[in-house]
Length: 297
Image 1: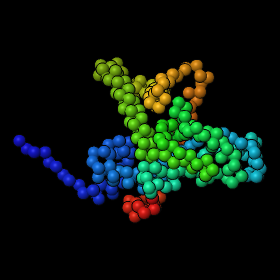
Image 2: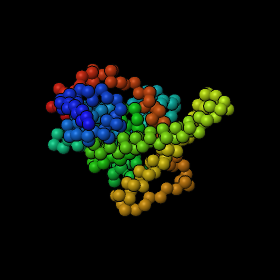
Image 3: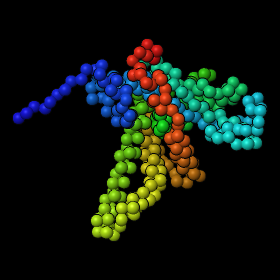
Image 4: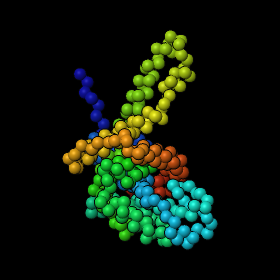
């Protein structure tokens, strides 16, 4: 009986190889195959992917001091410009600052783009949103990891209202985000496979051509995606509320469209992020494997 071939890879080789691995969900969730492998994966995320991770908080719009910022009658609402509204979006985008050197599981993110004229108002709105944390049953924070977006957990969240800054357990945040992403893709693939198998016999019997099969498979595809997102989000919220507060959270289909509005906002944000212009090859800092930056993080 032949023995299984075992190949040992030196820990130092993991890092440059994993630097170029693109399936972040698989990379993160299966990192615990060994301590050396997990260390290499986490180093890659610290040096490469935390830089492309941010948090979005919609703090509404303001018309205060508008003419101090814009000479013309334009406003910025949800990233779009509209004439004559004389309002400006107070959306807060928190981007990566640093990893805590005394606790490598905690990372800091802050808003760096707010015009000085609006900082006081934004800080006020920021505090009103997060004074009691990020609500589990109705999350205020959108987590953005490269071109994907969700409102999954922000574990061990701490907020510095004066500096428009948050810190959190970034490892737990990635785990929550990628677990839901994996389940979403698993169920979506199962749905498509089921739809394909349901039409395969008709194609073989000549009752349907290949184009009709594809059309049937993808009929209502957007609705399937939206329904799946809703199911997974509800399941996650119920689980987290039960674990934290010991109660069973109940959703109402008669909420005035609030839940569907949240899902649509997330969908719109995902679509917008899909057109983000950055890429790994567009930044000199990501053309290297980052090993020379350990002392800075």
